Amino acid sequence: MDWLHAIAGLFVGVMVGMTGVGGGSLMAPILILLFGVSPTTAVGTDLWFAAITKSVGGFVHHHHGGAEGRPDYEVIKRLCLGSLPAAVIVLIFLSQIDAQQIKGGLIMNALGVVLILTAVATLFRGRFHHMAVHARKDTAHNILKTGIFTGHIADHALPAQMDAC
Image 1 (tube, helix red, strand yellow):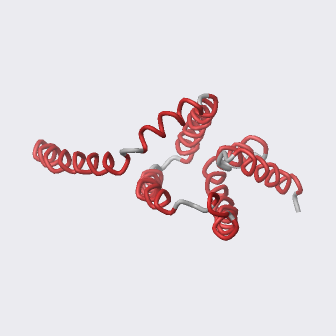
Image 2: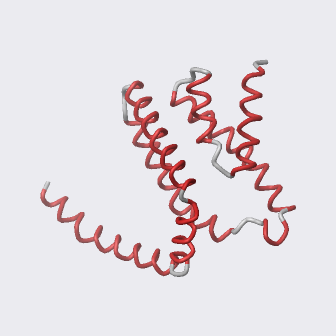
């Protein structure tokens, strides 16, 4: 057994538990930079690692979180409405790219951008929290308006684009 992998998992688990920062922003770079794993394999490995560890964490919070520590299932539902289709679209896109080197470079660049954005968001978390509290008041209404607007644009603009082809 390679103890370095277990130590990396322990480090990521402690950091995620302490900071709430997603394991992907820690585990994927560790796998790529320290263990020499290809970016595509690192992302897939991290997704399985996260699925297992987050399932355990979700179960614990659901059963032992208390009134203030339980998950907000309405927020989970809304997050899934955006996240699951986006994940499928990205996977379809990546499966259509032939060159493994391009995939690796694309994944590495995306990972770098996300890590920088996460660092900036962490530094300015007070400002972001203030903006989020004010924006959340009308979230459901804004989501509905955005969906209606997007659907309207898609209904009118896409057929025109298809006719132009």
